Image (cartoon, rainbow, N blue to C red; front, top):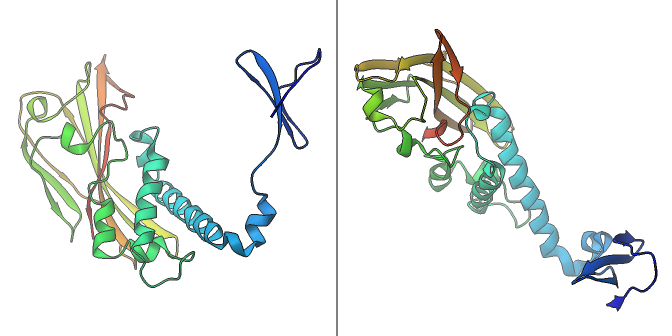
Length: 249
């Protein structure tokens, strides 16, 4: 490391030199690290190449799931969703016990019993976990995809944001194959209820139950609204909007 002297104080990188300021003084150092070309070809970095390949594959698998969710994911997500999915996909990839290192696949690991458990109960919005918002017992028929709640008292069995007057619930079934990257999503009807002490019974029935060679994800989303002059306005509050993987088969 050398101290930079002169009237012009540079900050940034010029060719292989990096100029920076520290404690009010200007310094310059030569860029270090291993070149990308060496990482690609040097036998000493074979483990690094394997890790990089699997890391990229895990990231792509997380993106595949987000895209397959359609508009649902925009209703309830947090700022760390991509990173949290990357962690899950990396763990799923590690459950592939048949592929060589560097070639392990999310699509193989995630269909194992342990792999399926990684996604079951996953909240796309970590600020609003399902078990922290909905306190009513519910049923799910995985054969028909029907999600139901009996005698649902919204004012007592929901943790809702200030100002909310209504709540909407919708379910969906996603069939997704991480190996072929094929997916199909079927939505249920939307049930909109006032937040009150009046019991309601609801049934969310998807238009179909997609099947495939990968996984079936049964999803539930909960969104809150405020009614003003007979018009309901969405409360864009990440703390309470829910999108949860209720079951994985």
